[in-house]
Image (cartoon, rainbow, N blue to C red; front, side, top):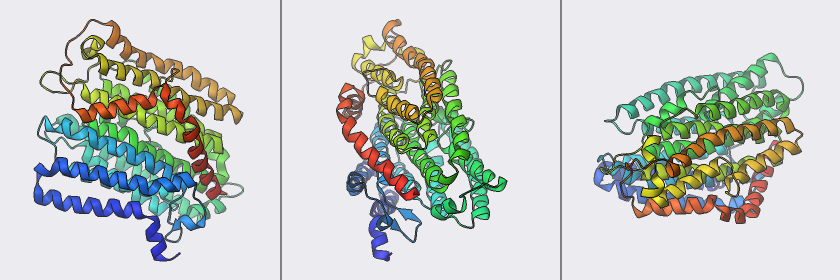
Length: 488
């Protein structure tokens, strides 16, 4: 393929690269006073990337015409769907950040630059069709994320979160690199298509170890059990807009990458990796549900909620079918709205001095002091619990339906039972807000941007969201079919 055509396929990545470098120079010259302006420009850049990618998704583009740089990168509909979710979640994080950081005069222009660089890494991750591209994108995202976790330099919790994330992330990268080296050793290539062809037939013990180590490294990135240990501490210690970012955009990128690696590179050995993913899915559902019950900090509770939801998403991967992959994409789209909305509500919970309120006991009686905020947060909790008629129910429904149609009825039954356990801690938040005596701690005011984004998220996860099921399911089907077409 000609270089010109390859460059055309990576237009969003080129735009992100140029924009981040230019904004980095602007931040160096203009200083902290340009932080808000740089954030606004970064949002426009993400919007432009969104509109560049959208036609690819709607058209269900696939085939050799969208493969760039001799098989290192693909701009198909599957990667496009993931990128749309990444751009939306990243933009939401940028909207959340300025007001949060301005209270402590810690909003710096480097924040939107790091966010854009992380988005660039995630775009490379979801479009990777070679282990080398995969690792470059993953590390670009990770390096930016380590700095974001420790962004509040005067906050011990933030510094601790950054160190923990860095150390455990380095360990996960080592595991992933070892798995990649084994994959190359036993297949003779890092290209997904060649790896897939080489793993046809009986699988050697060495190749099995390669699959295990690669999946283990990726499981860390999606905070799946048993590689979830970092999640509660990092989510609690990081600034809340950063936590919201970690819980949404990188989650989409890592899950999409796991889907492509499993169904494409390791697609001929589905029976081997399916057992691993099955264990990880069930363990994540159970640990996420039980671990959240005793939490007193709402950000730690949301960390376990993230682990729990990853388990439900992975049920779709266990099926190994187009319908299962499509259900995962639908779930991810709904999950982004639910999680972003939840963290928005958390950011908007401030005391009289503007300090964040994170203790669950401090939001007691919120329905009487801040009824609109309490209603939005309650709807998010009900939706995360999968309680109809809110849209979160649909995400779980399509995943369980895919499992049933793949003759995994027992898995679906266990998932449904575990979702009932998980509903306990979501309902606990609602009970504290609506039935406990008011703690009268949340008194701070929120700006219009936060309210606008929260209203949009709440409307999406409300019963109005069901109006989008046909459209969302249609483009998810096209994206999932594209993935299987590449793997064929």
